[in-house]
Amino acid sequence: MKKLFPLLFILVLVLAACGSNNSSGSEEKASSSGNENETHTYESEDGSVEVPANPQRVVVLSSYVGDLIDLDVQIVGADAWSMQNPRFKDALKDAEEVTEDDLEKIIELKPDLIIGLTGLKNLEKLKEIAPTVTFTYGKLNYLDQHVEIGKLVNKEDEAQAWADDFTKRATETGEQIKDKIGADATVSVVENFDKQLYVYGDNWGRGTEVLYQAMGLNMPEKVKEDALEAGYFALSTEVLPEYMGDYVIFSKFDDADTSVEDSESFQNTTAAKNNQVYEVDGNAFYFNDSNTLDYQLEFIKESFLGK
Image (cartoon, rainbow, N blue to C red; front, side, top):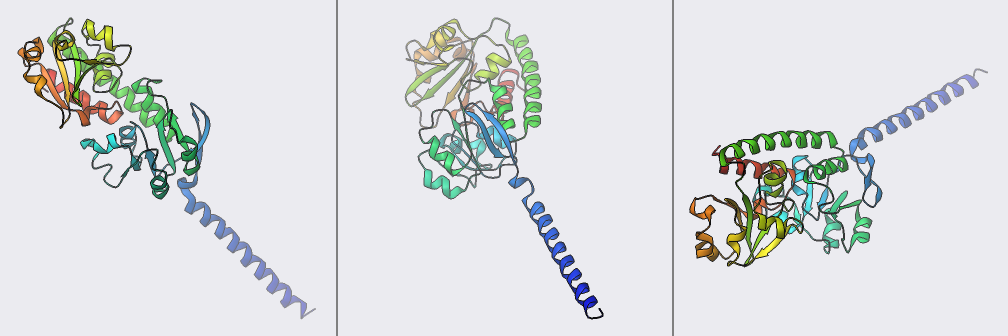
């Protein structure tokens, strides 16, 4: 009996030590995983997708980079247009330019989430790399799209707060602008890109959502006829005056042909004669993400109100 007691005592100590080690290991594993290994189910257009609750390495193959920047989500790969945006330069300084065809490059970036537009030809291959979610452009309005991005990255409350605040700011600014320029004044959004002129409707970026949807400013009748439904309409220099409003947001790119601005058609418009053509950098004004919308709102406010 005296010999048995020490053996039993040693066995109890060993079992206790093993239990302690297992408990410690479980706690360490749970602690180290944190939010990085947690997921949530996002209801996408194509069905339920299990995505990271706190994505750390996102590849964006579309125009939603600015939304993710505002929601403080790390982007490791982005499309060419976003990479060329001077306002995104700091946020994307460590990101790589990618397309959906750059599968090996995307694999090397080790994304935990990929975001793109509906119709990606390599969608199934991208899904093998990381959870992939696509959106149909224009299916949601510009505010709801930001909130939807917020849902995807588990930051819906932040996204909704921005949408509510933006609506308030844009509405107030719109009322001030209408008081100044008159309720009947018209505004056009014209772009000079790759030797071609375009005029835009009310949902194609470039400030159109801000001017027409949020502020309720008027577009010329010809713009309504030809660009409202399609989103944009290609113009020749000769017919440009028919589409130029009393005020014009004129989007330009560095390598664009600027001869149109010296043409008689352009110079004889009301907007040009009254110095009411406001030029913007096309690369910075292109999208309708939350980050760009804020920039567009401030530019429009300063251009029309001088503040």
